[in-house]
Image 1 (cartoon, rainbow, N blue to C red):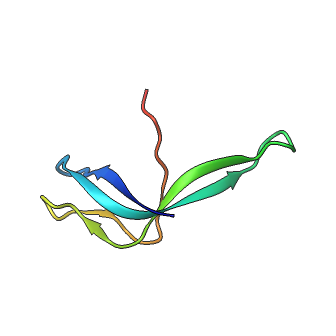
Image 2 (tube, helix red, strand yellow; image 1 turned 120 degrees about the vertical axis):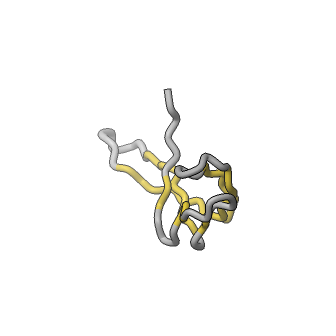
Image 3 (cartoon, helix red, strand yellow; image 1 turned 90 degrees about the vertical axis):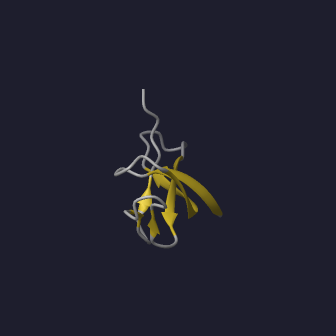
Length: 69
């Protein structure tokens, strides 16, 4: 499933939109009847920051979004 993901540049802090494929990766679980699927994003092309031209994402790299507490 193709979607657009907003990512922040680590160098300058500018927000950029990146085109990605959304995948679900199965993770092993302790209970046999339960399936654990983790959403991951695979970048489709090399993405550079609009402001500073730093490389944000490269193709075939998986991105996992984690919530900060």
